[in-house]
Amino acid sequence: MALPSYRKFLGAYTSASERYAEAFYGIIMVTGCTGMVSLGVPKEEAGVQFMLWTALMVNILWGLIDGFTVVYGSMVDEVASDVAVNNVRSGKDVKTATEEVLDALDASLVGKLSEQDKAKVVEVIRSSKSYAPYKNKVRWPEVKRILAIFSIDFVTVFPVSIPFIFATDITVAVRLSFIIATVLMAILGYQWAKYARMKRWKIAILFSSFTVFLLILSFALGGI
Amino acid sequence: MKLPGFQLDSIITRQSQVPKETIAFVGETLSLGDRLSELLYGVLMVTSISGLVLIGEPGGENDLYYMLVVLFITIVMWGLLDGISYALLSSANRAERESLVESLQVEGDPEKRKETISEDLDETLIARLDGESKSRIIDIVSDGLPRNAGRMMKNSLTSDEKSIILAAFLLDFIPLILLVFPYLFFDTLRTAALTSHVMALIMFVIIGYYYSKYAHLNKWKGAFVCGLLGLTLIVFAESTNLVLI
Image (tube, rainbow over all chains, first blue to last red; front, side, top):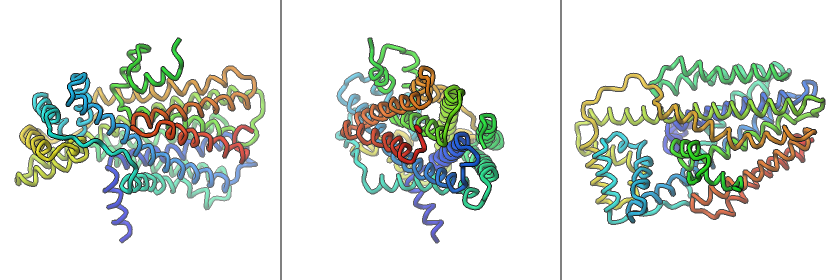
């Protein structure tokens, strides 16, 4: 019962595209950071426990920072939309303001309309009786959105940390972690491309090549 | 002479005269919120990576050169990954919208059709208009949507989305390369890393200030919170002997 509730929670506070993007950033961040630690730490000093803490800390910190920046970034965009709408309604720099309003609406169904219909939409916005400005405050729904994004990062990226729990040899753990990250990236790329109706295998190979490149880079620079 | 702070402001607000074309390109391609978030992620990434590489006891004559290479690769990689993921996100959003249009094409019930359109528009600024205006826009969208458009079989990146890759890359690369400069000009790794981290701390404060300014929040509070985030990263590393040893 817990899994459907969790899925419902994610569905309510994040879009499918966002979930894929968050997982992508999370895996790259943790793989990149564990790879970089393996560069800086002499093999005899680097313990699996140390790497586990590094991976978990990066995971948790990145999840939180990601959640907050998504919420605050949206806030900046909403306020920018308000400014554009107010300019359209007050007749200040109408041409630029109209473009900005249509830009803000482009991802919605308005983006599919003809130029003529888009102009009608802007006219309705201009002549509307009232427009309630965006309330730029972090309330319970925003907190839930931060938690949803944090959980996507944590849950998706946690498998990358697993080798550091079970492996005793640091070299084995780092390499296993990279292999898991590569597989995760391939699955993620495949699913994301399927959702976006793009070439699935092409994107899966592209995504997994990022972690393979990080691994090669780590070797080339003298990492574990 | 223009101060670096002014230039950063220009990148964010698109109002500068120099370098006009690059700034205009980045400004037109990425939203204000995206630009600020990207700058924050980038500074965070470079600070963390340089800190993590310094873990242990760096020593040896090639350390500065080594760090320069690592940071340069980090910035280029991060810029590219960021750009690619942004372009894919945009492409996925487009596919999501196409699916919605396709479902509306086969929806026979006019009320349900309007309800679906209303739900989509509720996620935009149209939700903040009065009820009557919102209904009028729903009617315009309902009447104006393509009725017999073919199903989208395959999706690929549009020229705009390809531009996003370049814009995100430039937005990461141009300001972040500043953090690499200390490794070119100082003799010791410790001094170079310290200078780079102090520069990053200043960037954190500036980004926090503008984040809050454009979100209509308290600017100095925002600058303080972002600065604190950067400072925590550096102080934590210092206190655990992980960075700047």
